[in-house]
Length: 361
Image (cartoon, rainbow, N blue to C red; front, side, top):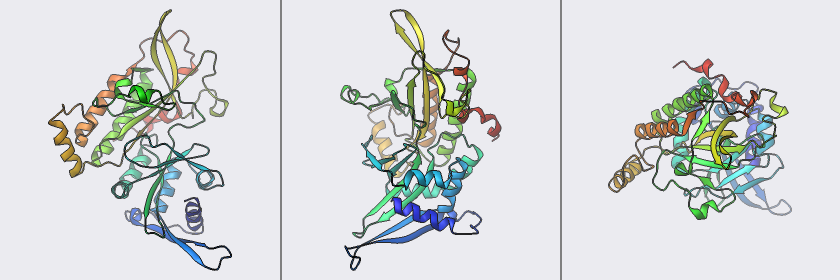
């Protein structure tokens, strides 16, 4: 995997005049063989085919997100280890993370790979028009065919939890209620992913809240147009402890470029009610599930047993409407500034502050 990404980058960079991008670039792949030899180099023992889909488009995507080839390859194809993570869901996908925790690599199904190829031109237009999108940051897509003719399809994505931030709590939010509460057994795990019914309201400074919801509104509109459903808002909370600085030197005094935003939750203790300050990271994940015939049959079957608003699977338009309604209920405006809240803590991070520059539709 690491060798293939490095070889692809070298091939692209050796092209003195890259082609002008057009509507066919999502169908172009770089394909070559990787061969391994027995000890002594005399007898070939395996032959692996490597293919990178739409390499020039993904290079443009990385540039849109401000990721240089050097930064990307330094994380995913250096000598540093890429470690496997426990699978958080029921899909059976394998997850890997780079040592610097900047990128995830995930195995995907053939149907997901097909959907990614189909939506890629629209995805590129969307992220270029709205660069502070919360959609998954797809930065490479490739497959490996082993000597035994097994196909391994993978996609590389930018991490939502960046900047070395320790995440105290993590939520996967869909807006549905059936089976959307973490079990007591799950809550005993070190890195449990909580769900919709575990979520308490989050409060934001009003202008920050408006910006967050506007971004999610546009991103979910794009997913509806692409016929996508069953996506989630992945949310990470990192509590700001008493006396802790609310920003890091690397991001500057006003935290203009930090990959998080400040939010607050109410806490009731012996001294009464108070707000707890959190750094909040968020992004929309699992955006490759179209509303297929199989999903339509699943929807009909579950509607016979449950209210349609409570189940996860729903037609894209209804799914989006419920998703947004849930977030508007859980994300609330902060009506009064907590006494301990500093002026610096009220500032939104850089991924939200320039939304007004890209608000035209």
